[in-house]
Length: 474
Image (cartoon, rainbow, N blue to C red; front, top):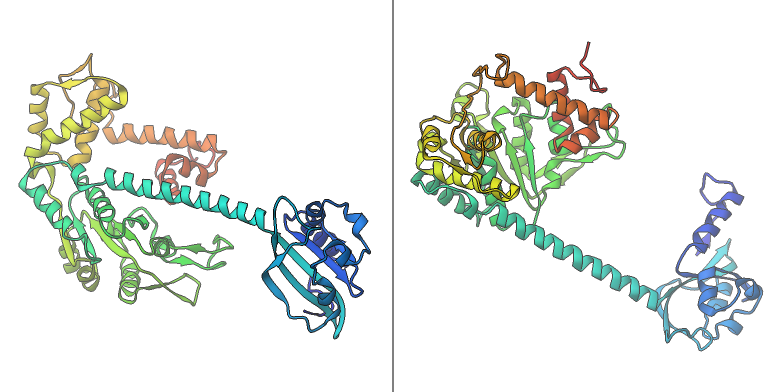
């Protein structure tokens, strides 16, 4: 190895030498430097311990008197010595320790202007290497086990068997979804809010051939339009003010090999729709502020509660993107169109509450009857909230009455005439305020603690008029 002076560094020669010394002395590998006369000029603690010698007692000693199989004299004296990497070297009896008969060695000559300066060697002790390899294999096996277990549990949790309902309409939807499992065509799930679009997206992913790869969820309505491009496609360092100096991968890259679930696709701005279409057509993304194209292999599942054909007609949604996404259309009917499934959901929600809280609460026929007469504008999600509220407000172990509060409905008992929306905003404001105070105004940590995206947390702060301190804005 021809040495060129000076060494590129920001340190002084003295500080650089100290840094090298610290690096060598802290290593588990053995390091050895032999001068041009074949004498040991430096040996680190790990190698000296291996030889069961004091390193100071070995300085200036001919290398062969300590390691009789050594090639380091030749490496030190021959400027044309061909560097060796990871060669198996037979240990001498003087090196023999704990039955270790071989070591793994790197050796090379160091020369300056064609004149030999020294020979340098690195020794990897086989037993230690095998121990580390065994430990890594154990960790890998454990990680593989937990990964497989996570996939199994996710597939079990999000299985089609867990999608409730026996009506013809929900069975037809499940049958359509099952036909998507052996292909990678885009799926467009349409249905009202609360009909279970995300549940179906999860089931399709975890029952399909991509189940061992990521499922990445993007709510297109929750991310400000100016941030959506960088969220989806990622960005390079310094791409814009506030960007991480390391850059960031986008959702497409994170979902590579798996599935990208684009929820609320109907709310995506038109300029972003054009960029999304290009990525879907070309199968590659380009970071914001970048020039390199990155190939991605992603299955798209999109969902919306909007009437996309109408949005296309009104020029709010690109026709070409609509056809690109709508290869396999999946329509989820509202609950009011399949009321024969109502009891399935009531029983399941109540069973979960009883199991989690170690109770045996039942619901009366008259309460069921009242639920059956309601139109359920919020669908299954609204039904779950009503059952949870009725469970919490019950007397004893019987739910004999239920309260239905449609969106925008004003009720007076115990509320001072305030609407449900007003009460929920006040409750949400208090939750965000406490999170901000616990985290000293750090929005990212507060959002992570509540399990929501930082952008969503910020938008809620704006909506509720909160400052970083948790106080109301003046």
